[in-house]
Image (spheres, rainbow, N blue to C red):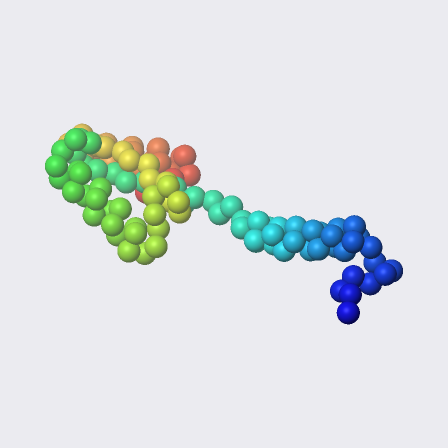
Amino acid sequence: MNIVNKSIGCDTLFSLVFSAMLFVLSIPAQAQQVKPLFRVGFISPEHSGSLRTQHLIKAFQQGLRDFGYVEGQHVTIEYQYAGGIADRFSQIATDLVAHKVVP
């Protein structure tokens, strides 16, 4: 038995199969939607290079990963440093909120 019916030529069958393949391959591309990155602020009481600040950053990043958020994939972190000046906290937080960053 011949698979290709005489009323459907080889060119038509190829076109149908090729179109079906393109359609199936396009479905995953349409399903992938770009999700916006969350912008989160991190305020350290010290300078950026201090060991305590580095420890806090690593712990913060690990905590985000524990909840399924990976920096650069799901979340963007805006790092700000008070440089040991406690009075800078409120100004840094105000700036982050003004830039639509969640402190």
